Image (cartoon, rainbow over all chains, first blue to last red; front, side, top):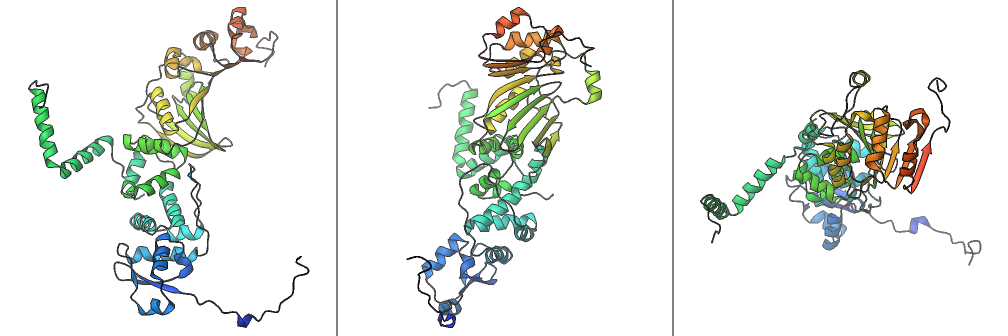
Length: 201
Length: 229
C-alpha cells in the first residue's frame, strides 16, 4: 500500500499512556545519594546490567535502599552522573581499534573535566569500573592532551614515569615481597658463582 | 602543570590514552623507558614510509593522512651555516639537539625541541621502527649542504636505500661519491646541476643505466652560472 492510500487515523494523544520516567537511587562510598534517570544509566554498561538484573519497579526504587557503589566517592560519582544525564540517549561508540583514536572533547565535557588531576584520575577509574565508554574516551583524551609539545624530560614529570632503573628496582622489590626465599636463593647462587662453581646443584 | 600518575590507571585506560596521542607524542613517550617503548610498540601504529632529507641537517619525515611527522638533527642557523661551511666527514653520532614536530600544510601544529639527546641517528631509525613497526626508509634526498656529512656513516645508518634523489650538494666530488656509494638503487632522481657544466659524464650515465627507474632533472644545455642569474 502506498503512503498516499494509507488510512488516516485520528489519534487521541491524551489516550496514549505516557511512560513514567524512572529514577534510580545510588549511594557513593561516602554515603552521598544520587537519583539518576533510567536513560542516563544506559551510558554505563555495568549499571545498566545491574538495574536490569534487579528488575526494580518504580515503587521498589522508592522503597528499597539506594544501590551502593562501594568504590567510588560522592564527588566523583556526581561528575559521572552529571555526564550520563547530559549524554543520555546518545549512541555508545564502538571502538574500531584504530590508532590514533580520534576523539573530540565537547564543550560540556571540557567544562565538567575542568578539575584537578587527582579528581580526573578518580573519574577515569570510575568510568572504567562503570564501563562508560564515551566518558572513558574523553577523560583519556584529556590525559593524552597533557603530552602536547612536551620534551621527554617534561613528559616524564607530567606522567610520573619511572626510568628503566626504577622499573627494575620496583620489579625486584615486588619479587622479594612475593617470595623472600627467592632472594636468598639468588644470593646463594651469586656467591657460588663468585667461588667458581659451575653448578648450583 | 600538576603531575598525573599515568601508570596507576587501569592497563586498558593507559592503552586508551596512548592510542589518542599524536605520532609525535608517541615517539617522545617511547623514549622514556623500555617499558614505555614496548607499550608504544604494542599499539602497532600504522606508518609505511619514511623519507630522509640530508641537507646541512638531517631530517626524517613520516607522512600520515594529512600530517607529517618531522624530526631534525644537526640543525644549523644561518650564522652557523657560514661558520661550518668547511666542515666535512661529520659522522651521525648523537646530536644533542633534536627538533620534532607535526606539520600540516607546511605549518607546525605541534612542536618540541630538546638538547639532551643521547641517541645516534641509527638508533633513532631503530626507535622509529619500534614506534611504527611497518615503517621503512623509502627515499633519501641529498641536497645543498649535505657535503658536511660522512657518507660511510650515512651508508652504515641507512644500509638499504630503495630510492635516491640528488640535487647539487654544493660539492661536485661529494655528489659523485653519493652515486658511487649508493648505486644501484631501485630508483634515482638526479639533477643535472650535480655535475659541472650540467654535463653528466658517460661513465656515470653507464652506471645509472642499471637503475630501473631513472629521472634526470634540469636543462640539457651547457648553462653558465651568469645566464642562470
